[in-house]
Length: 107
Image (cartoon, rainbow, N blue to C red; front, side, top):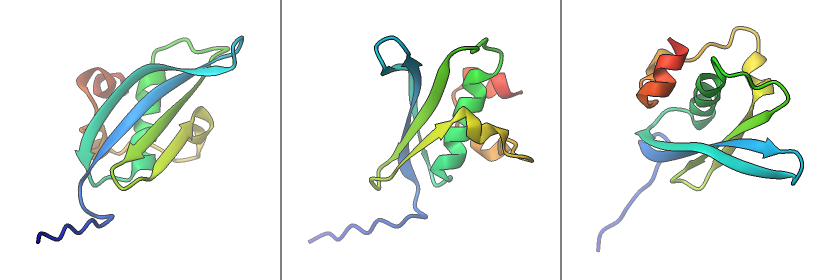
């Protein structure tokens, strides 16, 4: 028999979806998605993903959010309002987990 022990500090596959709210039909449309294996905080990863996605885009009148899911069954929703916290800056270690096009948008 093999015992598998999962701890919160173990690296896990984290998946994210960048969602845009479509006002007329009141649905969330997936604009992009990705994944990484990491032990980083899913909320911090979600903030970095959303900040990178919104950087350089004209998103006036649009509502975006990021849904982050972990292998441990947890999920976190990050909205643009959470990016305006005083002193928040994307962690360089977390940025390294992002695909190149998102990582470059934060540079």
